[in-house]
Length: 180
Image (cartoon, rainbow, N blue to C red):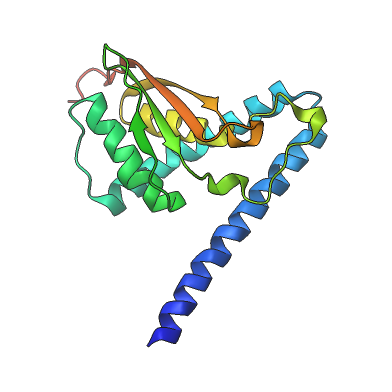
């Protein structure tokens, strides 16, 4: 019995490490293909956005989470359900703005940066900017426009990784005339 649980744990760890290494290879290739870090950051964000647009359907189907009523509830679902489901971590939700339209996700550990050191010649690279795109794309599909950016990053010497999210507006669905 314990052998099976060890195998399941080993399999998850191997899958996680394979994902981390594959992502590292992707970032390395983008750094070779593009002239500067800003362009690599844009490409990672764009890829993440496209992933998020598709991932939200899987998330809603697998999590059985209903519609969130406000941005605070959305923040809790992202941290406690989505990050746990897809990355195996639970970031803390903190640093709410007084208006309640902006918060931080604090990641004590970022699985994307295991085994990673940024070279000196890539000081402007936001290595995990794919995550910002995923969050932006997924939330856009549920009619929420948000701004997502990294405020702190352990790869840059910070103690934690902080993703800052700001609610911009609720997107109105434009149904064709006659469709309701």
